[in-house]
Image 1 (cartoon, rainbow, N blue to C red):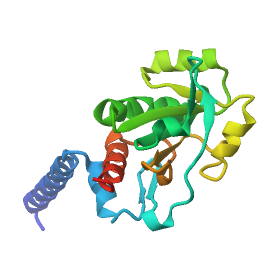
Image 2: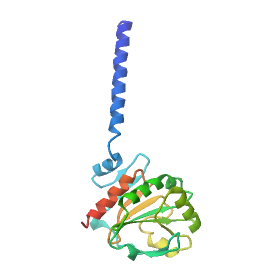
Image 3: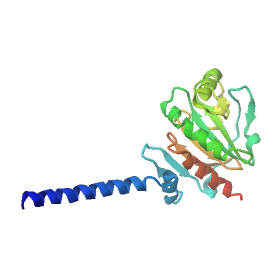
Image 4: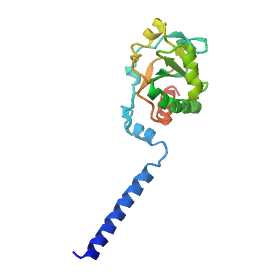
Length: 206
């Protein structure tokens, strides 16, 4: 092969590489790619590149309704009865948890999109006192309240079967009857994953 031919072959190869790279970049520009990947999993489970795992629980396989009572970071007492008839998102976190900081904007974005009369959000802080929790919420733009579990054994026990409290972050989607309908383990990769889970749970009851 001549030098000119070799140079021509190299140019073609570089062009092909460039085209493939451009195609990959365009493919990554689709709307809500993580949500689409989750849906493609036929609701059996989804694992994102950062190790986050989202799993839905079929209606006929859900455990008994959760019953809890606790005090929020703003001093308000809330119970599970306050949320019956709504879909409730509960996020387990603590201030020194790096993945909790990473996922905070995604949680707030999901809350802004689907929170309202039919959907409530509630944090559950696993190790901090109320002032620390409030400071975290302010610094990270979280506008929904968090329960404080420090010194509240009953609150911890109420969620013991749903998720170990030392596994953070974890996010639960609880159906209108108070049963765990979906679980996100690890830092939420995209708000679209959580909003998809919430909307699917809402749709179960019209």
